[in-house]
Image (tube, rainbow, N blue to C red; front, top):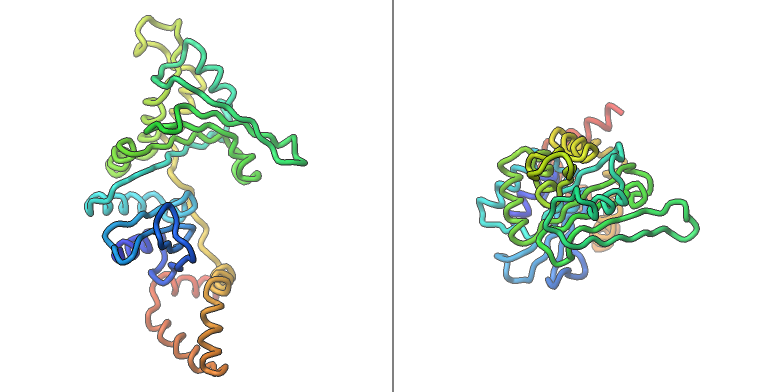
Length: 292
């Protein structure tokens, strides 16, 4: 488990020391630790051979495509199993709304084995004009399920797009992991979306494979193939680093200081030891602060 934490830390451009024990476990595990950008690792001591690692979207964003692909390869080489992978595509041009998806699903253009679609409409109290629509294709228990929703509403205006989010679980997640390691991510996402549901103009040809793809969906799929997996992440500032350290490590430092009767010497010795173990990311952070 320790070697995996080290590997995840490198993937997230952090250190082993960045991980913080949590008070409670999660998902049936007795212990959990929190890493950079919301990464979590759950386990049952003393068994360190079986554990669960979850990387939320912000952690994937922090890692970037190249580091994630390398980490996925590391997982496969070390017999890691993917239990769930979410593939997301953001349609900033809003070519197709969730309501359009439902309309086309019930039309003769839909090419899919999915039998059900579920829709919800929600808004927060006091903000009726910010209502967001969501459509789910497939059952919640399925290995593959697609969610199409207004990300602008869910993100509070940070991401103004319609998000297509395909959840792969169990065997579908295992295959997805291998495909992400061995293929271009935009093309993998396009292939998985089309594999779940395609929209072909029914009257354009007799055979399904000869039919013309519905124009908005074709444009969206072409964009998916060319899309960058993740936008670059702005490096953390020294002020953000200091605030994170104050919030998460402040109580521990206070205990050490109290134990030594307020003598700052103990803290200084810790700082000296820490400086000897600086890595490139620490030097880069300090360099940015001096230039600023």
